[in-house]
Image 1 (cartoon, rainbow, N blue to C red):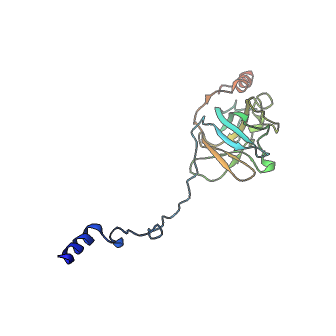
Image 2: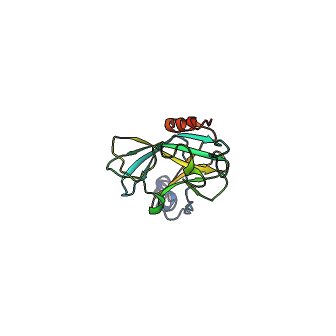
Image 3: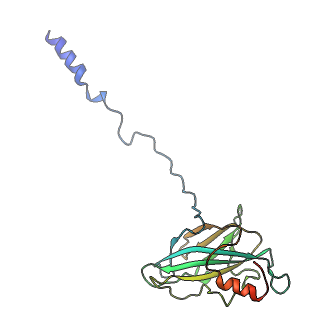
Length: 198
């Protein structure tokens, strides 16, 4: 009788091995996969490092495509493009590093890896250059957002806008394939003076 009770008691309570499923090291490790670079939607603000590594908020707010007038004002490729950006230092005054310092804005076509730097081709001869606010190496101030316009000479509409920091960090935005948005008042005024329709 004593042996039967002891056996039943052991079955009910279970031994240490009955509930053991293995330690945390026994499970197969999951292979780490590199994260796919994120491409932000148009108009999405992003915080990037300024030249002095202070945070700067960058928001693309407008884009304009024009083929020029076909004579004095025309792209070397297909489109002269103005992209307006809303910029604001978030904590300390700072500015966005230009290409000479290892930073800058670039464009990339869909399905291509080649980068085109702003100001390429005939972009700097666009009518609005010198009239619309440009991306100068000047300090942006916290609480004082500014609009700046960058210029491209592109073979196609759409694609991806990229900003690189000297440290190698890259932020990407998907570009609309048609004229849209704000921050383009001076750009439109300059085109109107030249009799050019966007």
